[in-house]
Length: 165
Image (tube, rainbow, N blue to C red; front, side, top):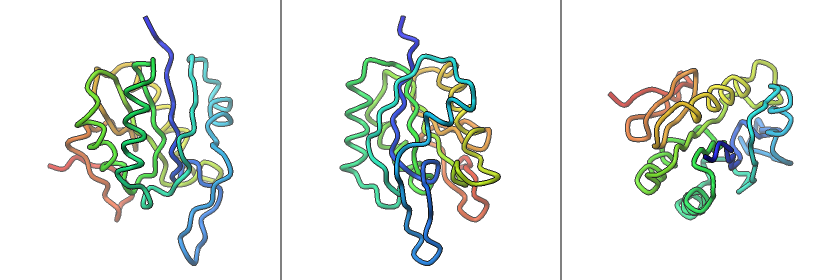
């Protein structure tokens, strides 16, 4: 039985080093995931692969197809994808319609990991628990909640994820 968890990083606020206050442009150097996992004292067998480092507002279906192909072709059945929160529901829907045989959790942060009061570690820890406990399917794990890919939206005013209904 394969218990290893594959983590794909795509950028977003969780990995952002700096956000330009004037242009709202995101700047990245490298993923913060290894440092986050060390800080959290992770003992789960994982493999991290950086797919891209993008603000999710700049993601398109070509990027989503790349993520989908990686999910379908990887050996692992449990996958965590770090992703920007603005278009996380769109990517979850794209994956949910195409990947049926794996457990996939999309996770991000409203406040970058490297800033005070970040929600990144909490969200990542919740994603780790969810990917190990949930059945096959695609989910968003944010704000202590787990939401199905086909029934989720981001409430941008409140900075939280909610069910559509």
